Image (cartoon, rainbow, N blue to C red):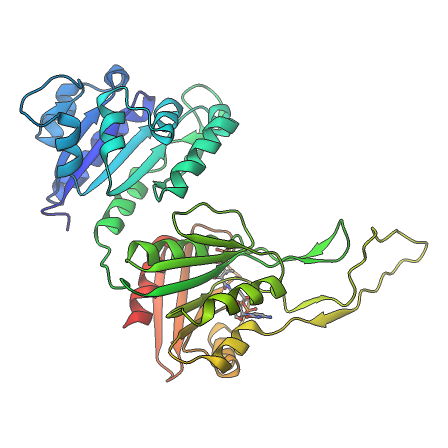
Length: 391
Ligand code: PMT
């Protein structure tokens, strides 16, 4: 339920502006107070009257249309529990990233200090533009949630990534954000994400298909639940909390050892390579006349197990990626690793697990309890995992 929540929607000048009418209707149906602020260009795509009728509130456009002593951009920023900007054009995204406040919407954004979600929509080449991507990274690093555009036919006639994500996705992200409880305040949560990279020579390496998405969602969720999040990852990621970039399993182990003593929760969502080459070749390995090439591999340390062996107050959570006999393998793994919880992932399905936006997992604990989390976005699964392990 969104009853009692004030949702501020910022609409900018893009063709997808008309879709926001449906979003406003959905929020109103759930009892939210919806306020709408538009850039002047947004009104080329959707009328003020429509937005006013649907939101049952005045629609704000002009910065100096002063009605009370408090400037409008401050009142709107103060009243709202969350701000969504959808569709967000390249222009507005870039202004917000650089702190430019030259209309009512960008001024409100500049004065807004609570949760903000931005759903960009634009031509695919504009989305790929380096300036836009740099500005998106700036916003992510500040803790602003970006709901990336989807691929498909664009209004400009192109086929590519740039279409506003679905209204359901925006609705879900808002609902999710407003329902976060601060249960992890005062706790330190260390999360690993992504596949480790084990170099063979200057050209080749051993790795796996882990994108890091599951781990990112967990460290973001922990942060939103009030925790001090620390993310140890092999992938590039922007967030407003500490991120330690690593490459190999050995690097990951060193970083974890540094963070371990002060941590309350260690969540090992990374896919760590079990083996690395015995000897790294400083020079590129040359093709020979032989049809075979033998690489000798040696075992990487089992980081999860070593952490479980030395843990004192920490809750240690392992993940496992299985392509068959999910529960049987997970049961054996939790016993072998000695962790408090094990989150079992089925990687035989293409719609969940590696690289996908959704997941469906089963959480085992060391007393034999089992909890299945039904398929949902990795963000929702992340929150559910944290709530479950926190108890
Ligand atoms: O990153 P995504 O694309 O979003 O995909 C998410 C995921 C499927 C990768 C993730 O949810 C997942 O399942 N991660 C664990 C993958 C894995 O390495 O499973 P495993 O069964 O090989 O290892 C079990 C546990 O031991 C893991 O917590 C792993 O981090 C840890 N481990 C493994 C090997 C090793 N040498 N040291 C370890 O600590």
